[in-house]
Every structure is written in C-alpha cells, then in structure tokens.
Length: 168
Image (cartoon, rainbow, N blue to C red):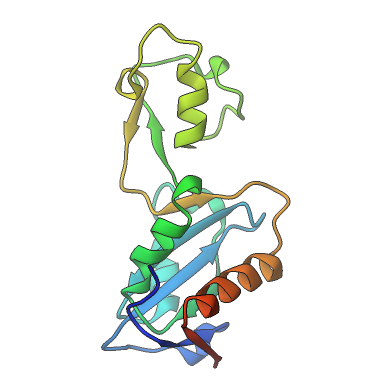
C-alpha cells in the first residue's frame, strides 16, 4: 500500500492543479466534513468537482475541494486505507423499512458496518435482500472529524511508509 510513488506533492487549492499526465488523486469533503469523495482524474480537479456536485449521490452533500496528490494511482490505496468507512450500500427501493434503520430517513448510502448491524436483527443473512452494493466512491467518517487531524494522520502514515510529501 502507498508504494506506487515515493515523492508526492500535496495541493490545497485547485488553482495549482491543471491537466496532468500522471493524474491526480483528490479528496472532496462535504460541508459537514462527515463525507468524503475520493477519486482520480487527469483533468482539472475543479472541473471534476463541478461534475460530481451535479450528480447523485454527491449532489446533496455540497462537496468542496480539500486536497489532491499528484498521482492518480494513489486513489486505490486511499480506498483500501479508508475501506471501513466506505458508504456504498444503497437501500433497495422495494424495501420500505427505513424505520428499521437507525438513521435519518434521508440517508441514501450506508457503510458495511451499518448493513451488518441491520442484518443482525433480520432472519435473512444476506445484504442483497435489503441493499444494493454500488461503486460509489463515498466515505462516511465518524464525527467529530477535523480536516487538519485527518490530514495529519494520513501524511504521517504515508511518511512512515517511506513516501516523501511536498506541499505545493
């Protein structure tokens, strides 16, 4: 994990990011800092943010640019690193039991942990009876979360694995 490139540049502004042959791994955060979209692009990250902000399920999250690294290959590593927070289970439209879920009725995507907790009280043993697994690149972090604390932990982890981080 995190061994694809030994020297990464960290960008805090879309102003310093344009087209890149190597691509970018970006992290967009929701307004409340609870949700993050982690993806990659070779294009300008500002354009990618605009597109994500207009599509479901990201539209309702009011995503904002947080950071980007100069390596598109890093996306896979971040998905693995944050896998326990991935919210990619969609409640089946045929199931009308949102009251069984301990959540806000407007919630659309659920983490694997939430799905497993839900299934503990059900006679079935498969999530497919209630949920559909998606390819959504959305991660739901437990609150409270701070941008600086999370970034610091991420940078320390990268550096402990021998990756040099430069700030643009």
